[in-house]
Length: 224
Length: 220
Image 1 (cartoon, each protein chain N blue to C red):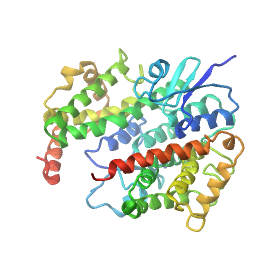
Image 2 (image 1 turned 60 degrees about the vertical axis):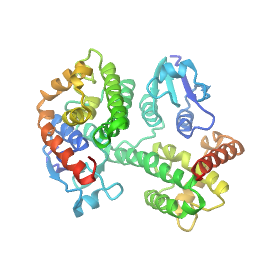
Image 3 (image 1 turned 180 degrees about the vertical axis):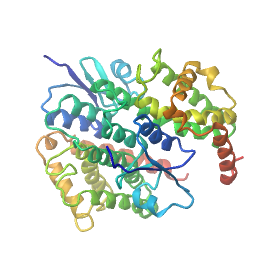
C-alpha cells in the first residue's frame, strides 16, 4: 500500500529533526517541505491552524502536530524498531524526561545563552543543576534508551548539537567531561551515530544564526 | 491487579490532581489520596518528586509517576482492560494527545491571569480565555465527549478546570455558559459521571481559595 508521508520543517528546527531521525530510523520514505516561518505556506496553516508551527507530519493527508506527539504517532504506526519502551513505567519515565528537556532544560540553557556577561554566573547555576539531573539518567547506559537510540535520545537530540554551538559562541565549556562524564559520552555517541549524523543542519549556518540571535537579545537587554 | 497499592499526592484545589483521580475512578481503582501542604512539603513528597516538587504524584507500588498527563497515560496503560481513555487508533491517539497538550499549554496560565491581574491585563486574559474555550468548543463539535461517544483522555484533561470556572467568571466578570454554551453542556454531562463528580472540588471553595491566595500574594 503506497503511503504518502510529508514532513513540514525548517532547516534548523531541532523539534523537526526529531521526526527526521524517527522516520529514517524506521526506514520510512517521506517528502520534505521546508518552511520559511516568516512567510508560512497556506498548507502549513491549513495543517496546523492552532499553532502554525513546524514540525507537522502529514500521513495520507492527515496532519499530526507537536513533535513529541508526532514521535509517539510514528512509533505506534510503524511498529518495527520501537523507539519507546514497552513497559508503562519506563514509558512514563521517558515522557517525563522528554518534557523536562523541553520545559526546564531548554529554558535554562537558553537563559544562559542570552544572559549578559554579568548575569551569566547566575544563569549557569540553574542550567548546571538541570544538567546534573540529566546526567543521573544516563548512569549505566550508552543512550537514554539503553544500548540503542530511542525516543528520549531523539527528544534530547537538539541538546547534543546546541551545546557545542553555545560553547563555541560563548567561549565556555558547559558540558565538561569531568563534571558530566555520562552526558559528554552520550553527546559523542549520539552526534556520530548512524542515521543521526547524516541529518545535522550545516554547522556554520547554525553558528551564524545563533550568533545573530544572541546579539539581538543582548542588544535588546542593554539599558539605553 | 490484586495487591496494588496506589497513592495520589495532591491538593484539593489542583485541577492537575483531579485529573489523576478522575482517571483512577474511571478505572475503578482503589487509591489513597494524600493532601499535600505545599507550604510545608512532606518528606514523602520531596522524595517522590525531587525534580519538580509539584503535585500530583502517583505512587504505584512505591514507584512515583509525575506530571498529570503522564500519570493519566500511565493509568490508562497499566489498567488497560477497563474504560480505555485513549483510543486504539494511532491517529486518533495523536489527536487526543495534541488537544490535551493544548489544554496544558493554554488554559491554566490564561485562567490564572484572569484572577491575578487587573485592568487591561485582566480584560485581555478574559478575552483570551473565552477564545481558548471557543476553540475547544469547536473541537468538541457535536460529539458528546471529546473522546467521541466515550469519555476519554481530553475530557479528563479539561474537565477539572470546570470547578475553577466559577472563580474565573467572578474575577473576570463573564459567564462561560453565555460564551460557550455547548462546552458548558459538555461539562455538565461529564459531571454526571461519578468518577468526575467525586474528584472535582466545590467551585465555591475554589473561589474562597483564590480570594485568600490573592490576599497572601498581595494582589487586590
